[in-house]
Image (cartoon, rainbow, N blue to C red; front, side):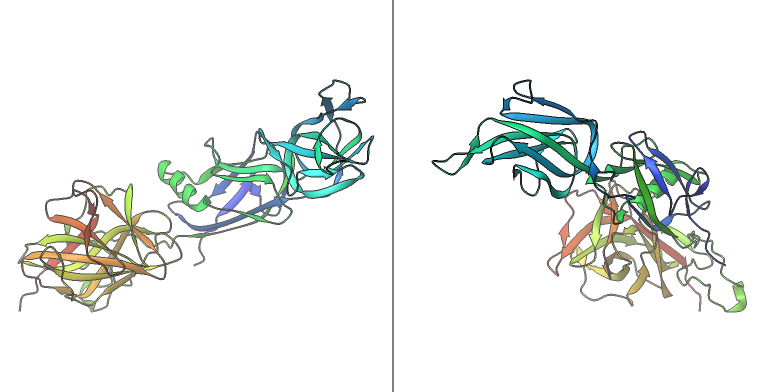
Length: 426
């Protein structure tokens, strides 16, 4: 069966491939996510619909003398809203003059890029698009003696600006929250990808149980046309999280294995797991980083069936690599006690339980043991918490094969699940 579709809508119609007028009040969009699902990845791109240059209108001029027709040391042009400035022309009563240009962009005066000094020219001089609501020209005149441009006065005339209708400071927000994405400056006519949408959408869904429509606001500094160039999304695979003692394995005595090789075995119980997992602090897995968590095993009537860790991926699609070790003087012994386990970190950008099961339960003598974890093919995060349970010990970190080191907080532990089944009687 095909996976349900994630939709980006405006006025209950698909928004992808359409052009909208967007301003400071924002364009309302809705991201429709199937019930009970989370986003794995989202690709949303936007671009300016028009980058054609044209003469700017509605400009107000001012200068230091109050009369633009007289000799001035500076002149300012204002047009009241952020526009994409791409060209400038100005004349002077002397050819040995130039102007040092500053633009007011997002409330800050900045030098014109890439060169802030332009010679007088009746022909428009072009530059890369820059977001600006005002422009100031400081007059420079060439001294005959030194051949150096220095501040002086001259009669300026023919000041004209070239602009485009490209949006400035485009941004995207979830509902009424501050924007999480902002493209500072001028939005180009080539697609710009918006990052971080999947993570924040999943957070909104978590904070608003039962919600399917996530409200979005697309903004720009002044009303301009933005094209939603493309939109695509994939969902986290809809595999129900196993619960200890549960599972939907086929046919009890049929001898068939459940579809999920890491699903709970019949009669499995939880030996160790936090009552409520926390996703506040974490340790990196993968690359040169490995984390080990100690736990106590005292149950002679049961065998170790599976383990779990509260984690999420950090990039790509890594696999968590888990090994079980005996305790040797407070650190994991060098040799593992059982074959290593590998489990994909497939719960997207949200923290969740990753569960791994040994092919056969492990009948362990009482003692302290370590679960040592890293990641391959990318990086992951194993979430830690304070005030560890009584049968959980300290967590250690290891970098680039160096010594095992304690976490800075000596009460912290890497949130671990330990699951057991009754020992099979001969």
